[in-house]
Length: 502
Image (cartoon, rainbow, N blue to C red; front, side, top):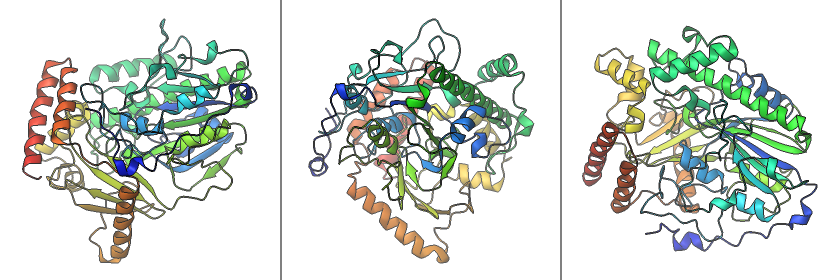
């Protein structure tokens, strides 16, 4: 039962432009994306002081750094579905995490397709992998090079990728490469993973980051478990930075660097209680650094941009016309007008059915919770299995959390609307939605978000029938019996909440 775009929205999608002939590609730049899992902007060039990241810093000093880039979705599959099409995931029906993989299929709207297909038709070699033959996505040695992470929530054809690497292309043929890195996932979520990372840091870097040296957001307790998790996360940033440096060095040694547009970004923020899966800066603010032909050196931009813009600017850099219906914009165009607002959405993640939307402007972040009667940390087999969440729940049960932590993490309900001041409240801890001084701003942002929902054809929540299909498929693919049972119990709770109108 394919999930197709609504008839109203379908009428706005026109045919994609015919790409330039392959014979015209000889002098075109290579396009190389470095896409990192589960990582916020914890790099030296973004102000991180506990670690050094010389390779990403070098990219920034030789290129362009954006300080206000945001993901349109804070979880892997929905982010990547939007990334690879240049479309809001809510407009193409790909907004529910890890959906369309089983009995329920999702088909892209007419006229929308993954951009590797467009690059391929324009004569580019398309590839996705680690960027380093002989090393995997975590930077470890491997004897088997693999294709990189895709994770799209729609039907797509594997032949849109020619290979895992650019080495096999024809002489002189330009390439579109995605270097897919595990990033924050390297640290794992268990004691065994922490120890493995610590051992690796000792071998490769001479030592790991001191847990007591790190700074946590104010809503997380300075508990040994959380401190160690954050320090191990910072070590994953250092490992990622080294991998980036090796890819850049490879491009340079092969004489490709100066004709390659390198775009470095992450797929959402840190995987933490209020980070990944949520629309606060902890979950959606991402680094974005671009280096290459036509890009100035050592420049910084502070205007608002969205991760779907990467698709548009990449097509433009390759001399391929951007489809008029693509929602991403070429933010490198000299005529680009800064965005007045950017948007994000969170929907079902695993069994955790939710619907949250947000709009950011220069001064404010506005969030609308469509299910305010549900807690922020709803039951989730994925999140609840993480060591940090287990510890937070233990501290909550023991009454050892601060009032701020209790309010932001363990309140049994959520406000229907949230409003935060940019800059003055970097962790979004003070909700101004009920403050009379900000009533005008609240009204404006509420109306602007609703306008975006209508204009972009936001497809909203799944039907109960589709929820069952999707969650049944995910349960069947879960090998761990305990995890599968937790997931099943959670789905029953969500179905009960939905029947109660909660």
